[in-house]
Amino acid sequence: MKLSTVLPYGDDPIRNADAVTDMERAGLDVVWAAEAYSFDAVSLLGYLAARTERLEIGSAILPIYSRTPTLTAMTAAGLDALSDGRFSLGLGASGPQVIEGFHGVAYDKPIGRTREIIEICRTVWKREEKLTNDGLYPIPLPGGTGLGKPLKIINHPKRADIPIWVAALGEKNLQMTAELANGWLPHVVLPEKIQEVFGPALEAGYAKRAPELGPLQITGGGIVALEEEFFEPARQAARGLYALYIGGMGARGRNFYNTVFAKQGYADAAKTVQDLYLDGKKEEAMAALPADFIDKVTLIGSEGHVRERIAALQENGITHLHVNPMTDDVNGTFEKLKTWMS
Image (cartoon, rainbow, N blue to C red; front, top):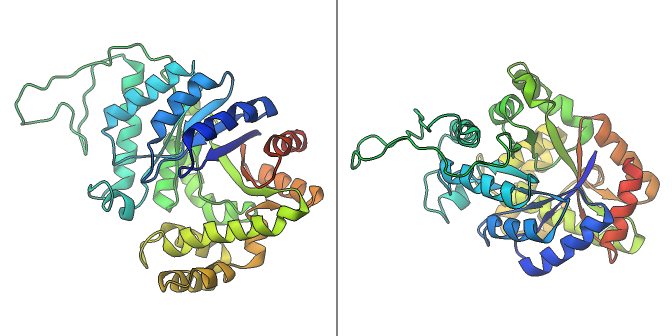
């Protein structure tokens, strides 16, 4: 099991990068840079590649609509070279509010697009042949000036098998992830429900999975607080985060996070939280999240409780303990977690 964290996209990137160098010394294994309608993740990842030595770096996520597939492949190859083979490409569809509202691009065919992007990236990295593609991304472009021709990437990528992770929520997307990706970045993991909720989709994907990909890597964990004075602030932070996603990240009937929350045994709460949030009652939406849900999707509490939750994650297939610490001693928290994971 590896220890990972994600850098918030709304904070000062220089301050974040400075903190990461200390996290590396404390035992952190993987750091992910998020990208929403914020500073881009690529700039920060390049900076982190230069500031760190052994730490794995990853994008969580690069939206599939905001770059061409070949630019995504080029970017991943560049970051992998700069980090000496420490980069993982995290991809995701984001949502129509961001893609259409901020990027001005139609949000369509997310699964088909993700599949083709994965295939195109791996073709570019292998550099065995000039790139051509039929489908949603015709390469070379038919029509146009008529001057387009198949090309190879000029540089020799550091690795032809840069790990690809997908932030999948829906059943078909998760099935595709289990078939093609190296890793899965779920939004939230309730370990006791993984097999019941996600098992059929995972198994359908595994049945088509190439052996050389190895086992699917999976993140899971949540906000962590080990000191009593941070327990309640951490729970409130978790309520704010999950109320935002479950209640506000999409319209009624088009909120993927709400759907997954409902499938994990909280159908009534899912509707209540969404109704309250969309009516502008954010505090009430936060309060409507069940206490047992917050306890199960976070690592907040005594050493015994947190160690039990880590064991539950490990027993249910989580390979990367993915945490967001709330403490005055982030590095001390990482050191404790590394000890408890071993």
